[in-house]
Image 1 (cartoon, rainbow, N blue to C red):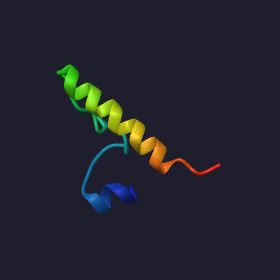
Image 2 (cartoon, one colour):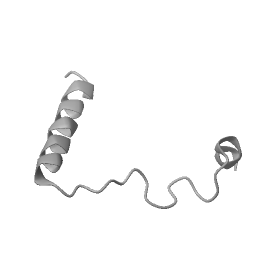
Image 3 (tube, one colour):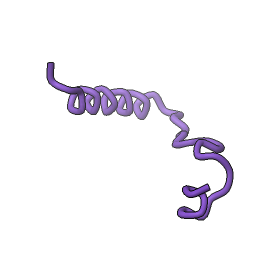
Image 4 (cartoon, helix red, strand yellow):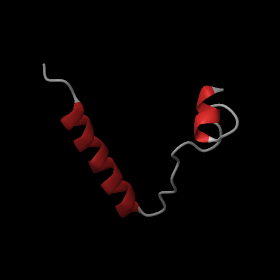
Length: 47
């Protein structure tokens, strides 16, 4: 309820397509995968 009032939305937090994008080209998919791997390495805690 608080979130909905604050951001003027309706429904639950993950209602509908949450951050979903259409990836229709192989080159775009490859660049997304590379970016995700880089982010995982950069944000992973050091052991």
